[in-house]
Image: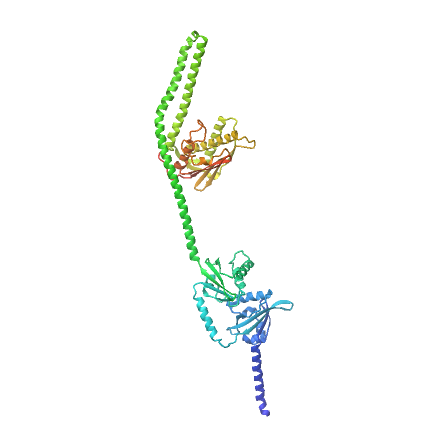
Amino acid sequence: MENDRPDDTDTVIESARRYRDQVLAVVPGLLIHRGERVIHCNEALARLLGYDSPAEIAALPDVLRLVPDDAAYAERQAYEGCLAGERRTDVRRTKRRCADSSVQWFDQLLEPVEWGGEPAVLEMLTVVRPHDGFTELPHQWQRLQSAIDAMPNGVLMLDAEGRMEGVNSELLRLWDYPPGLFPPGTSMKAMLCYNHERGDYGDAPLESKIDEFRGLLKIRGVVHSERRVPSGRVLDIRAAPRSDGGFVLTHFDITDRKRIEDELREARDQAESLLQELRETQQQLIVQEKMASLGQLAAGIAHELKNPLNFVNNFAELSGELLDELTELIAPLGDQLNGDARADFDDLVGNLQGNLRKIADHGRRADGIVKSMLAHSRGGGGEWRRTDLNALVEESLTLAYHAARAQDRDFNTALDRRLDPAVGTIDIVPQDVSRVLVNLFANSFYAMRKRQMSIPDRDYRPTLTVSTADCKDKIEIRVRDNGLGIPESVMTKLFTPFFTTKPTGEGTGLGLSLSYDIVVHQHRGRFDVSSVENDYTEFTITLPRVASAVSLGERRRP
């Protein structure tokens, strides 16, 4: 019997070892850690991971050394949430790296605990054991994963708690996620944190995105939203609820569609802009045609009137001279006339002289109108040269103001000059542009004087504002007064030849028409006006720095 004891001892030892292995196989692996440091590890976990003792795991510099690289981010987020006090009542499937670098799947349960008076993470890992149908499940899962991977759109499946149940490869591609970054069981908060750390949301706080996602889970219907991902792709995300409370999020890549929509929108805007330009050009052509026809008519009338008008003026002047000679001849005979006859004679001579002076004055006025009509029909005839525009504006304003003061000594107005030094010199016919400016200034003075006389207002102060502005290849001249303003019904007729709002004898109706011709036709510019009655009137002249073409009769300086 004594010879059998060694064998019995070996049997007992072997039996004890098998019992110990069975017990350890049932006891879950326990791991307590805080941050990166391992605080405690039991022997069961060491055996499950293939280590000789728990001390080897405790000696690891980082607890994430036990986690494969493709699952490290999700585990870090889970650990941080647990340290923050988040409790999980469900089991999460995860994987760990063994001592021989192989990978083993475990069922994981995390619990926040206190260790040494400070918060720590209690992690319990149970190895996934084969069971009935276990060999078939991986195959079925592979078939399901292959099916969703074959879908042309990104797919993300969530359970009722917002945890990931599965994603396909297209979703990983669309969002530029590394494969395996978010294993099943990962909360959506982990994905949102990853996106936030990557800078997907710009300056938007993470909490707002989490609240937005939580609001999505409360909607029991299909929800559409668009999102631009860091790669520049535009995704149409549709969240559809499932009967078990979960969600299926489908991501459609609509980048090409959005690009086409943007191109179509841009093409439409360009077409509308071209159409507007075409309409404006058409309107200008109509106006130019009318102006040309009126100019030809004015030229014909002016030529027909000029000859008889010259006769009227010449004979009026000659008649005045003959009357003076007649008066001198009759003067010696004046003593032979009685008192009444002498008075009648003097009265008759005075009336004749007054009538001749009126004929001469109106003849000269008519001659001026004819000359304006001929100038309007011929267009510009001056010499083009580089001109200091601000100096020209200043000179024209001074001339017009002194002319207005000469007509009415009681008239005064404030002159607000806002001349941009950057305007510099410009290629124009200076005498013609000066003519336009003097006409605008004179009209402004007239409108302010009329308002001052017709609407007594002690607080009213006539003010003329003249400004110039540099617009790169163009310049702007603005003339603004606070006079009577222009009625809306008159605005469309302002530039029509012979149209005037002034009383008979005070205007010919050719000033603005001729100014329009000089600015638009001769200098290829724009002439715009805006006004509000009893408030203001503003004329805006836009001139190119270098005219693109010249009209017939214009001369360029060599």
